[in-house]
Image (cartoon, rainbow over all chains, first blue to last red):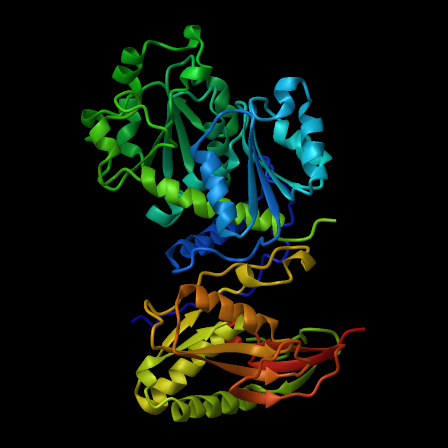
Length: 322
Length: 188
């Protein structure tokens, strides 16, 4: 039985979160990011209770509005809402009137007319979440907008790194793969650089353009050279659905140059973490056995995603915005 | 530490100084020992933020008086509040730290000020979602009255009759960089 308790620091963050929406990581301050991560740490313990549910958002309605297909993000948001006692409605593009020609704004206004308090939006157009956030009273959470941002994925990646390695500042994170089309990479770059991590992007020149250096990250096309210095490797999924042939080598060529094989993993530091936002293409971005190995934190990311989404819903919808 | 602390609010005056707070906590510690012959089953659980410091202090005093090291922990109440829609900024959520198994335990909730009783209600709801302790007791440094729920403290440092427009502020050296003190002020 432990009696070690640290007294919480006095509330220095008085106004550190007053946002109604989470549409991107880019506008967030370091204080806001830290508030999100600390709140997520508190919500993670809800999963260890006998009753894995708290009444924080009782009576609120969350609409999962996924215009682009997704299973894990949608289910994670849905479970997060259930754990906070909110009611959940799931809508997909095919079940909405978007296919009948209704505009995004009209669909959203209809959801608001039904008194939806939170709208979680996944959309193929960059800026879709921001568009709704500016027009609706409901809290709007971006669950991925085109190639722009996927803020909750970056938060759960950052949370997992902080949990496993104890800090973010000074950590060297290597992000491998299709950066050009990746909203996960964009949000991760924002979150990690704000919190003081060093980020290196690796991939074929067509998918990792040098322009990314403007964001304060390093760009290289030589994976083997950076592996020995990495604290974290984050392998992005090759998004077959977004690929155009001219940008992408063959899968075999990609794996040969940028796949995390067993031989490459030997070059990593013993304590380095292997991350992947999922779903994994086993044998393409990562060797199948490595994905199941002790240094892979891929399933921790899934668990932490739930805690992070509870924190986001609580912070955005748990206060009055008028 | 600042020898001439700024009052927590304009015009606030001290109603308990460091020595009086220490006396109150020592008395509460003795009362907890007296009421709970099986101290090994007692866990002191603080309500953030300053209740956590009170739990820590009481645990140290009980250890000193009885030789039994009791568990000191934290219970988050932010997730269980019934007034979230009244806040412009969401309340800070803290990590809950409880004994691994609550079954058969006596939980002593600790807080700085007892006012409406709603925070205590939220804390009891939160504890219940982790398990079923044998009993829950409640210790507060100051009871200022004006209950909105049928809740009463088992251990009270000081009863302070107040008007609704008055405010009570508790400050601890460990958390506030000002000497242990309880203050009262009027809201304009």
